[in-house]
Length: 171
Image (cartoon, rainbow, N blue to C red; front, side, top):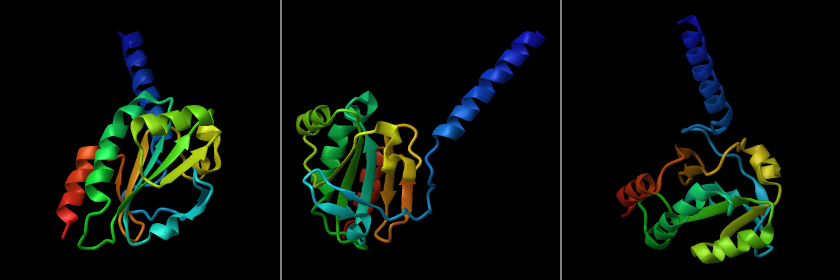
């Protein structure tokens, strides 16, 4: 009986340690740190450029099954809310930060999944890239929904939660 109890304790501790390790670096209410990167089209981008917008930052990978499964929902969100008029914001934008090893595989995934928004950033070192390190990304998908001031409204929201929130903010 003691062995079973110890085994159960070890399993619970392992899950707890894994949860703490993989937990996103930022919590709801925190302000997201401004960053600068190069977009897929070669232009330099700073998060500060989207101050005044609701912004969804999506860390994902073309090789990640759950990420790819979420992409159709993100496309629908973008179609529905990108041109919407909000009470407190200029609009809604999505920033995709792909954590990859293979640029061509990523490009095929963006095209195949119909990710039509303008803000695509590629990191070619997967979870060891500069943005992944800066934001403590240890698993994907990881998402942050930001308000117009850059404050985190939600960490890892699903598409329905984002849609519900944004629909309530429309003028």
